[in-house]
Length: 157
Image (cartoon, rainbow, N blue to C red; front, side, top):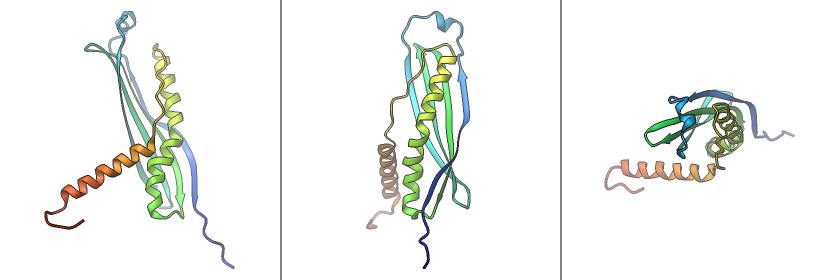
């Protein structure tokens, strides 16, 4: 009697891959009373790092706070993790990398960003919860549109 091969999805390591903080106009920015405008950019990346089913997934966030034309602070953090994904149908690997892994990493990213902004002398930046499911769906839709636009005229999809 043979045992069915069980799928494997484990977290091997969670780590900060890259982190930077800039306060280019210190100490003058601490004397300003103007409320800064905060811009947040977020992206996820995934790559296979070992043919045995080990993947690195990273969420990179860039936060820029400005008052007028002056930069108050700039924070960039890449929170990453190593995940083992084996014996999983290929169609399910991409959603794991694009949804499940970022959902696991995001609380660590939030804590790192809040701590870094606090250590820089500012109130903690609290990242709002993210829906990696909708980000993944949006990215899939964009890829489908790009593929349709790249298809030669007259072909049926």
